[in-house]
Image (tube, rainbow, N blue to C red):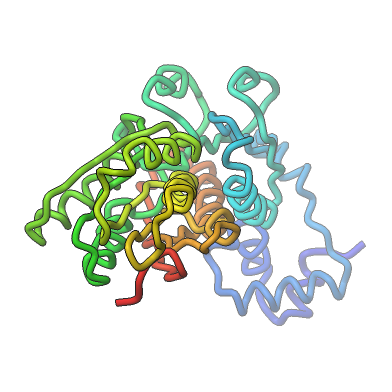
Amino acid sequence: MATLSDVAKLANVSKMTVSRVINHPEQVTDELKELVYHAMKEVDYHPNIAAKALVKNRSQIIKLFILEEIDTTEPYYMNLLMGIARSVGKAHYSLQLVTKDGFDTGTCDGYIITGFRANDFDWIRTLEKPVVLFGENSQGYDYVDSDNQYGTEMTTNYAIACGYDEIIYIGIDVDESFEQSREQGYLKTMELNNKAARIERFNNRSTLSQLFIEAYWETFSPSTCFICSSDRLAIGIERGIANSGGKIPHDFGIIGFDGVFLDQVSSPKLTTAKQSIVKMGEVCGEMLIKKIEEDGQTQGYRRFLPELIIRDSTKRK
């Protein structure tokens, strides 16, 4: 059976270096990891993860809670799952997807939680293992998210640059940090450009934003752009305009926020603020594993800048 010394000899590094690559891969370069992993494969060396977990009193399990209905956001969460699974797998952890009702069933070493709302923090505070949130929050928890304010500053500025005269914000009707930041980005940009702001809020359902457009169609002037807090709401706006005979993008523009899947199947395809969901999922996993290894030490937050993807739902500046 191959040993740590065999790997170190073949890779021409110390046993301590091999141990670091196995136990703390985030602390070494990609080149060094590739060298050691290649040597491990050559000599058929397999770290004894079970023994390591036993010594450290670990289960090598991470639980992921998604605290909202997945049926309406499935493509989004599939990308998140892919990213988290990628990073925790590299660290030899298993990932369990659980519901809120099952959070205290079975053991684990830490939690990643997303889809939370303000009233969820009462039970989140009862969790005794390290927690990382996927989503901006004002409760002091470590988190990973997009820079939501920057995202709507970017989309609103683009709508102004395209020459639209009126710019309306279509928000998600929740009193949560991510939505507050997105609205703030819109309001700040409108104020800086001396433009009148208008905000409408709905549950995150495309039918609701579509019905809003159709019900108030006569009140919307040509040269209006709708800045939306999600691609789902943006698709509803798009359908409402099309059903009412509006011309997209010449008279009416629509910009979404997410860029995961819905923006590509809409007609016309949506201009949107694309989030790096897979990468953010990876960082969630890496942050939690580091927090576990450091006995719960605070990790802070990481915010990623969304990318403006320009498609057919807006004019070109």
